[in-house]
Image (cartoon, rainbow, N blue to C red; front, side):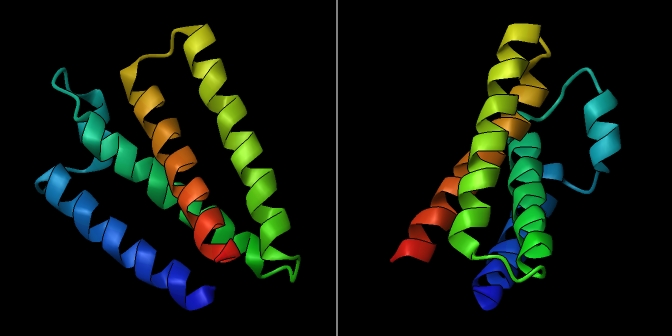
Amino acid sequence: MRDLLERRLATVEQELTAAAAGASLCAISRSAGSVPEAKYLEGRMAAIREIRRAARTGRPIDEILDERVDHWRAELALVDTRSMGSDWRAYRAGGVDELESLRELASA
């Protein structure tokens, strides 16, 4: 699983670099022309990093993934109820999608 996480993280980082076109994520967030694709990828990257950190504890990966998917889904639901905007929605949706994908790969 560790190798899978590292490969996915490297891929998402490359995609994020391309989507950001050289701008920092903070600059993208502050700009009027926000890039939801970049925020989506940033969410994917954050989710992978969470799993990577949690996996170091020795807990079963399926347990970790189930817990984090539930957390990210709940956070995504809160974004919609709090009207937090498209950037936050894209960020949380990216994390949920990545975690669900990782969960499928881990169970295969």
